[in-house]
Length: 307
View 1 (cartoon, rainbow, N blue to C red):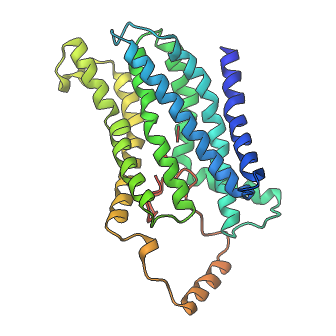
View 2: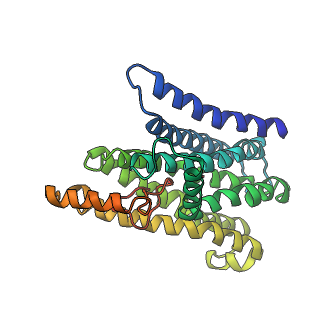
View 3: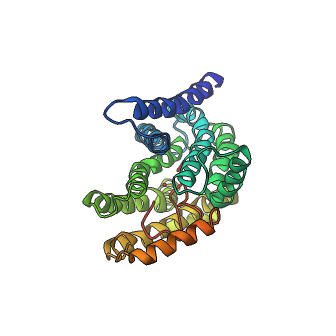
C-alpha cells in the first residue's frame, strides 16, 4: 500500500513539474512561468481523468456480479490517485496565484504576506472545491479501501468513469484563460462538456441506483428505501456539488450559444476604458480573478472542472 501511495505522490507532482519545465524551455514555446503552471495543472488533471476512466472501464466491465466480484485494480488505483487530490489543492492555488499576478493584483516580487493573503482568499473563494478534495482523501479513501471489505467494485469502477468529463472541462478553462471564447473549438468543447458532465456526473447515482434495483429485483423508486441510510447520505453529499456545478455549466452554455458572452459585447470607448482602468488601480486587491477551478457563479462564460 505504501509503495502505491508513494508512486502516486511522485507521479502527479513530477508530471506537473516536467510539463511546466518543458513549456518554459522548449525553444518553440518559451512560455512564461504563469502560463506554464496553468496549462500544466490542466494537463495533469486530464491525464488523471484518462487513467481513472480507463481503470473504471476495466473494473466495471470485468464484474459480472456487481456486489461480490472483485478486481485488483480497484483498491490499487484508489491508493495511487489519493495523492493527486492533495497535489491538486496546491496546483489550483498556484493557478489562482498567477492569475492574480497577471491581472495586476500582486507585484511580481510579492512579499510572503501577500502570498498569505492570497492563500486565505483562495480558500475562501474555492471553498467548495477544496472541501471536495479534502473529503475525497479523508472520507472516500478509507471508506473505499477499508470499509467496503471488497464488495461493490463494480460501483467503484463506474464512479471512476465520472472523470470522463474532466478533459473537456480542462480544455474549456484553458480556452477561456487565453480568450478563445469566439472560436469554433470553444463552442464544440462547450457542447461536449455539457453532455459528458450530465451523463458522467449528474446521471451517475441514478444509474447506480437503477443497476442495484435490477440486481436486487427492487423497483427503481424503492431502492433508496431499501439501501442503508449511510449509502443514501453519501450519494446525496456527492451529488449535491455536481448539480451545482452542472447548473453553472448550463448557464455558461446558454450565454455561449445565444451569443451573449462578454467577448461579443461592444468594446467600451477609449475614455470609458481609461476610467475603468483607473478604477481598477484604485481598488487593487478587491477584484478577484476567475476561480482557479473554473466553477464560477458570476462567470459570463462556461468555465467549466476537478477530482
